[in-house]
Length: 317
Image (cartoon, rainbow, N blue to C red; front, side, top):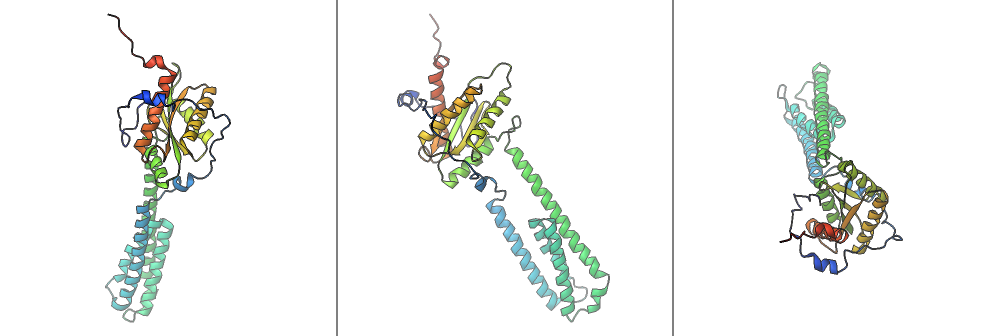
């Protein structure tokens, strides 16, 4: 079998398989007439979120702070500003916070708002000559406000884009392009948090031809599984020749039916794959317990299918 995930799913010593095999859980289940679970946009509810809760909270904090700066600076400008004091320079802080949070367009708009507030303050504050508005200083201030908002917003947007690309690369297998162990851990954590029933299927390629690329074979298996189970399914590479599949499921029996159906379809396509399965919440409340159950079924079914490969050779005296 292939290598298992090593971060949150450490290796373990399998228990005695005899009791498990006698229980009949390793037997195939006839599911030719059993339909696959309905699929749709269920995964989009959690998979398409690009902003985490802490990031959203930080964005709200930045925008709230920017609004407070606009108000406080405007009041201070009306009551305290004198020629040469420069209270309006504090508007740069609000512009920067808006640009960091919302990007270059909103950063530019924040610069325009600061210019409007500055102009209104000059008109209202009797300590400042209104003729200053008509000087070259006003358009210069406008250009500076707009440029700072656009520049900081552009850098912030580029940073978010680069960070998003790095996160995608960090969750992809470099050879096959499939989601890797890290992506699997995030996917199963999302499903556990949602607290809806799902199946964990662990697939292992039984044999790969001498002239066949195992990485390509794994990619074809992943494409087949994803095509059969639909968009609500997560498929990840968790070992050299292993895949982990997460899909909506109602029971352990349903998970077994899915595994057998996938094996038959893949066998018809010319690829021998063995599946183990487990179902949440009946067989575990965390990723490690579910993976152990699925891995034990995978091991037991391989023993039943290929007993000669697992019987030690006796050496004659």
